[in-house]
Length: 385
Ligand code: SF4
Image (cartoon, rainbow, N blue to C red; front, side, top):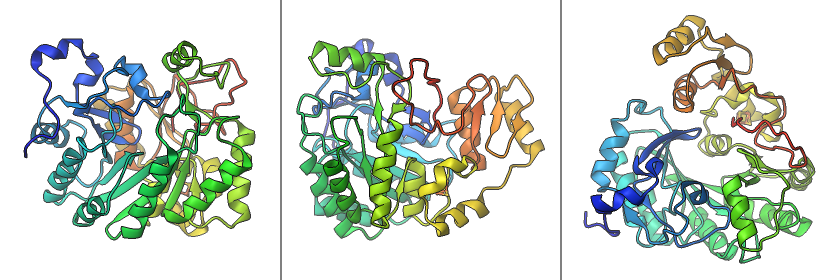
């Protein structure tokens, strides 16, 4: 295809963070493809701060779609029909006018291979009826469009109006035939967008989605520095490597949703919302982390329960040894606990077995499921279910 964004010249690559140069990365939610980088939307909490490219506002491609696709499906950990995939979730928005031809092209390339993997597209930008038609034309992939909506009105924190996401959500839901729509309600920031009015607005919007997922703010040192430099009030006294959401805010929003017998339901975990929307069991094995499941409808709990089998010990040993584990893995009802495997190897096992895999050196604690309590100064920060 003709490229809607220009390809970065090899001579320009030196100025780009090395971790952005590799377009395929294994993250908790699956293999993430990011061969286009650059975004003009300027959300203050953007992960681009972490890669030092927040100032790169014009999307540019690292390579052609065909080359990026080849790298994705030949990645050492890609498994056809199993590995979840995310498009452009690190350094741009997949529905920006110049990016979306590439988004549709990659989706078509995946679908043409008759792959049935989950594919997640996360956007806060404009989605048209024509985009929906293109999504509906895909026959094989399990496509989910997650619409990021915050309800934040302070343009220093979020210059983009939430009304754009609202409109996209409604368009997507009204036209959904072969894909699912998730209201991705985030980031929820205490004192900014967690009032009863904000919560009620999100609850009303959830009627235009197959599922809702909520989460707090990803508040890292680089983002805190940006807040200070730009005179934005810091919402937390501490930074953390996982998302922050105070317990009382979580309880208030869940009680509002429960009060209306929330239908469709609300989830803490992205994969839970996506799996529910497709009438499938969670692919990240969260069922073992029982405290996550209290918002989930009984039918979905039963689905996950029957799919969540404790893996065969010898198979787990074999996989862990092959991948370079330095201990004999421990197996609990919640997770496989192993030492010496980096995140991508742990996620590879997690998606292969549909069972959580944790690092023995970073113990997980009951109830710490992406809701670090901000007032605490020593947050155990490396835990992401
Ligand atoms: S039962 Fe638990 S693991 Fe399964 S989708 Fe619901 S919340 Fe997620």
